[in-house]
Image (cartoon, rainbow, N blue to C red; front, side, top):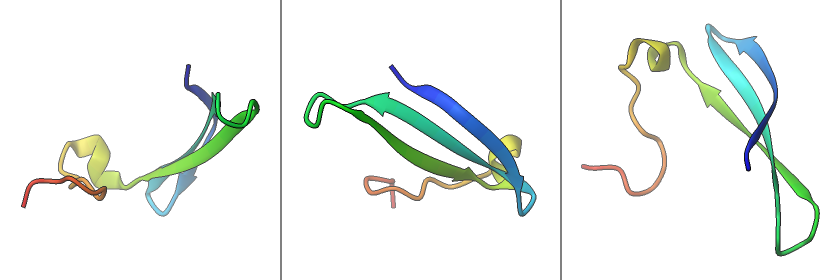
Length: 53
């Protein structure tokens, strides 16, 4: 399960902080994602490995 912890406006976009349970360490883990303004418009490019070139 993925839980949204908080969300903040940042440089015209949104910074989101998430939490999820980890089986490996037996504790919750946290990570964040920055969504630029283009993400809301549907024009953002994927920045993670595996994107089409």
